[in-house]
Amino acid sequence: MLCMKKRDGRTLDHKTLEDIRIHAVQRVEAGESPEDVIRVLGFGRTVIYDWLAKYREGGLDALRAKPIAGRPSKLQGKQLKWLYQTITSKNPLQLHFEFALWTRGMVRELIRERFGVGLSEVSVGRLLKKLGLSPQKPLRRAYEQNPELVERWLSEDYPKIQALAKKARATVYFSDEAGVRSDFHSGTTWAPKGQTPIVEATGQRYGMNIVSAISPRGEMRFMTVEGRMNAGKFIEFLKRLLHNAKRPVFLIVDGHPSHRARKVFEFVRKTKGKLRLFFLPPYSPELNPDELVWNHLKNHGVGKRIVRSRDELKRVVIGHLRFLQKTPDLIRAFFHEPHVRYVIA
Image (tube, rainbow, N blue to C red):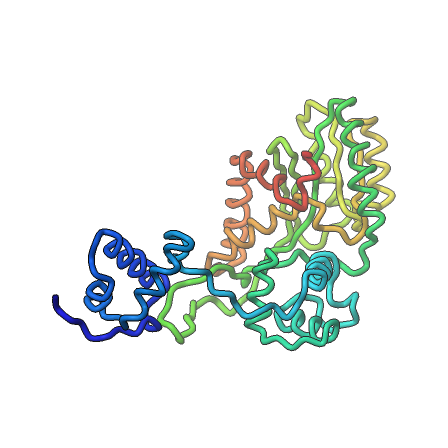
């Protein structure tokens, strides 16, 4: 038999070494000489006898590669449970940190202060992944928001509105206003690494205001607004919303002064039940599905265009909103976003 240069098992991966051990023992069991087998494989002669002893004591399973134990965790089970609950239920401001987001650096500081354990940011990242956490873009909520009012809206107020709407056979709309600027941009463009791309655009800026309303059934209405929104312009939008409406309209809005003006309440009263207004909790835009209309308009409409004039901005905005009007499936999909799913739950 040919003799091979001796091999160092430490240079082989565990799966390869496992296959060699099993193959060698099987050849010996088939009648070959142990020393001939191990010489051909290129290992020291004593190794084969260790393998045979393991095989005869525990079978082939005794020859298989054992998982390598990693470095022991510096945090124990109870500590990891506390860390997970803290990150998922609190923000850093509640623990007197200066920053409001759970970054790896912030979690690292939390671990150091709470448990006296020092970890690198890379180790913190691995730890967070093991806990089933991932970096995500957060929803913004005003610190003035009252959690009790939000909870009451979700558990009591909105279910009552739903029940009333069902009884009156009314259509529930959510409405909101927004301003759109020509210099807003979104998305990315391919370019050579290390060279930030430049997209040429006009230095002039244009803006316009819009009001819209959407329903869980996929209906949408909108109106452009010249200047700032006020009670008179809001009433004009309400008239358009009621035009040709076959059912009563329940409209849910925020507490903007134009929505709560006396002349607005007077207009609603004169509709004799054809229109009813309801108000979201203060500082709670995330509860309004109509916010997603503006997100779609800005990120998929205006944000991907170079707008060169006020008229062009108006054409882009109206064109995109008409596209949404003609795509009720997309409007209905807005109501399936996690933070507004309560509307259809």
